[in-house]
Image (cartoon, rainbow, N blue to C red; front, top):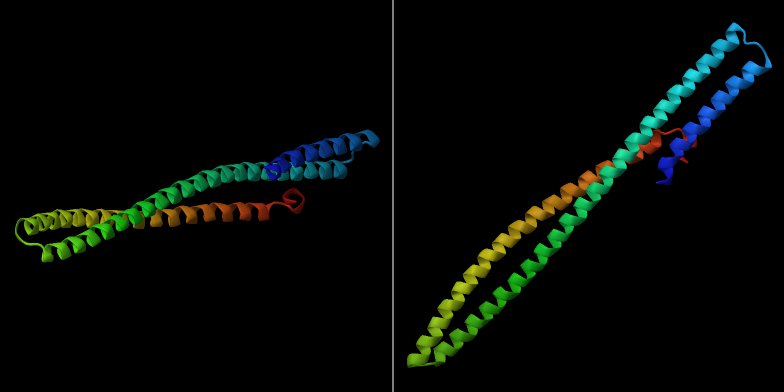
Length: 179
């Protein structure tokens, strides 16, 4: 933020120096045609430089604001990605638990007879239904994770673009303004 104030300070200093130089030149000797032309050219050059620095300062402020907004987008999407990855891990754990439960029920059913065997078979069917639901949920979560990964990469690329544009603007500033 300090660098953004420097162009304004430079503008004020250049304006004061230019005005002071004109007043000093007028007060010491009467201007002749070539001196007056040189002063006018110098004032025009100062005006052009002030205009350039002011324009650059405005562009830089806009880019900084865009950079901050894009940074917020990156963090938001990254947080959503983390949430989706956590939900996916939880879903996988539940799926593994149901699969282990089915194996246990199948072992118990193989040793059981009669009515208890029918009870185990019914529990296995219900667990299989749970497994199918968990697998569908896992597919949905994987699709969401892929979508969010793409969004994070896009947001980071835009952030880097804004950052590179700020660097280019900084490099285009005259040495006295940029440092």
